[in-house]
Amino acid sequence: MNAGCRRPRRTVNGVLGPGAATVGGCCDNGAVSTRTWGWLAAVVDVVLIVLFAVIGRSSHGEAASVLGLWTTAYPFLAGWAIGYVSSGAWARPLRYWPTAVVLWVLTVFIGLAIRVATGQGDVDGNPLPISFVIVTTVVLGAFLFGWRALARLVDRALARRGAGSDRREPRATA
Image (cartoon, rainbow, N blue to C red; front, top):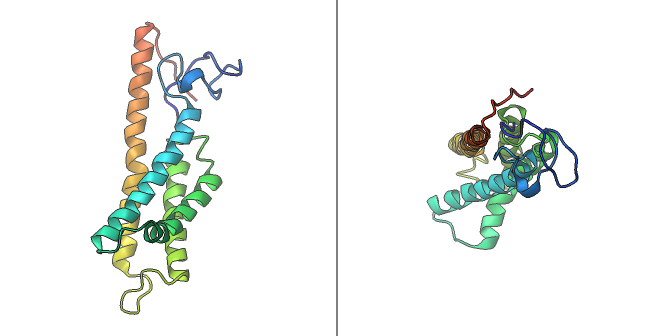
């Protein structure tokens, strides 16, 4: 969802309309364009998934090595990548449904499946402790939904500020 960019604006390629890429990544009304949110969303998601792996490794006293971090993070990054493509996240990067839900479910499900398949995380013969499933689901959910909630607030505030500065009433989006 892009709360801004409600009216035609100047674009790089001369195309006008809500889906057009804008000059500098912002709409004329000050809101951030969908294209900018699309790549920004990918970067933020990946950083938060890596942060999840860093926190997990440090909380279990595991070595802080690049290879160790990669080993922990890649199952979830693979799940996220599949979710990103299957949800079309670049087109609606801030939407909860289907974007964030699909990203969250596939990141967790595929990430856990890869960990089990590769023998990661075995605790006393249990390849998938329920506590890890719960923590993974909650933390990745908070990360993937939480920043989107904040971004939506920022996007709306920028759109309102821009709409107020040119004294026009914002139009409803479809």
